[in-house]
Length: 90
Image (tube, rainbow, N blue to C red):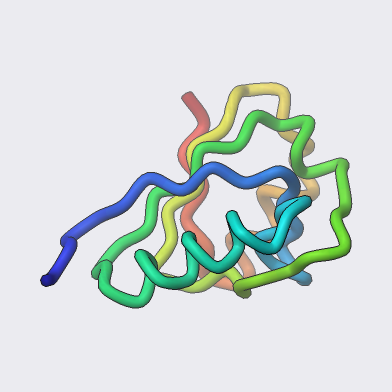
């Protein structure tokens, strides 16, 4: 089975550390589905960029597109752009 794109919901996100969740079951499911996706769309309100979690299950790469609100810190957008991470502010 091949999935072309997959929406991923995260509990916390960090441009350097990656995608984070609070429970291992969600991390395992997201990893499994993401392994079969060409593109992962991450839905994360700007507050999730200020949180941390103890489970980091994936770095952010060119296979991800992050969709967030317009309250995201401009420094985060700059760091993401430097790393080639696509963030769409909606």
